[in-house]
Length: 549
Ligand SMILES: Nc1ncnc2c1ncn2[C@@H]1O[C@H](COP(=O)(O)OP(=O)(O)OP(=O)(O)O)[C@@H](O)[C@H]1O
Image (tube, rainbow, N blue to C red; front, side):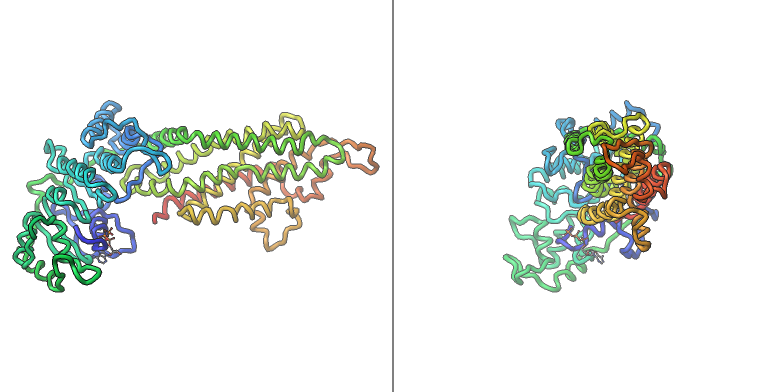
């Protein structure tokens, strides 16, 4: 306990091995008399952070089920997992809301207290021996806060020895009933310990130091008031004295911590049963991500509707361009538009959702729930499958409305390019959001990357004419490979009619060289797009794997 900024979260994070790498920690950390590290702690401890980050689309029961599948040893069968989930819901008082969606700021779900209970419940699934809670009552009303702390008290003192959990909890300024539930207290100020020992003894120490708790005063308030100078320089009832800290530190009995507590208490488990294998993790995450996407089906439907509207618009504006001489000047703009339009919706969806999801994933990974690679592979599979209908629907609608070459081979190649183009745009967005980390920065960078891809897309400037010093930007444009690919596909074998024009061109292929499309074949375009997708996704994975803060 301590005033704001006294170092509560820092101490808790230090003990839980969750500090960022830049923070220097000195001293020794032991658990039941034994030095420990992060890997060991992960196996026996749970950590609930101050701000609860949860998957808003899943229900309480689903959230616990997926966590149980990912965290519990692989030897557990479905029945045992169900029992554990039901047990935790009962312990945390969540049974009545098990079918309710967790919710997001825009979609009402469970209450704040229930969210906190769910976060703790997720940690309890693996029956930890130690639980770190960072300010669990923040943002809760007094009744909910007391209710929550009473539940923790039951957990700590356990209905059975097997279930008892040691709870280390940081708290800002608890009401007296909550304060009365704690067994031991560490009072912090400016990163230093002012008092450490049994909670009840703290009042005695204060009394001996000359700061007896007045009648009808919340002891927690009193403990903090004595050591916290009021901002205006005057405290209501109590004058803050500079030497109060010293008196309190000197007044307490020497701290007698038995580092060999392990003799009487349970020791660290050395062997922990392994969790699910990598393919199983991918399978579980796939199901979870599909379920989330299903709940967000309105977004998918909106993207399909937008695709149809766009396709009908383009198709009507360029309706049946035909094979006459006039079609020559209409064909290239519409092909370029098709390439530009693909993937924008997918890219925007990714850029808005990925950074938020990333923060949640970092936490889940920090608690050892799954591997970054398992998350990434499942994410990519779902993202690709969910997006696939968009370019397919677009191609089917647009191709025949415009009246491009009516041959199955040409149509399917056009379709393939639309799918690859859409995937390339999403991969670019995925890479940007993995590297930029925040939505704000990603949203600022993505439009520029898309614009550059369009500018060097081969339409405004023929690839043969683009300046040498921009050749690298030119090579990075996925729009260019799509545009050249669909142009080669359309122009090769295209027979044009003369419409009474003299000196007319009857072979579409004759335009390939003047437009500068002759330097890369169709296979090269497909290969370049595949390479683009793979490289962007590898970079995105490295960003997710290694950029942790
Ligand atoms: N022992 C310490 N040594 C040096 N700096 C510290 C120490 N403890 C905390 N700090 C620094 O003090 C600042 C406040 O710490 P922290 O956020 O942990 O406080 P807090 O009590 O959790 O605050 P709040 O209640 O507002 O969340 C941080 O910048 C942290 O790095």
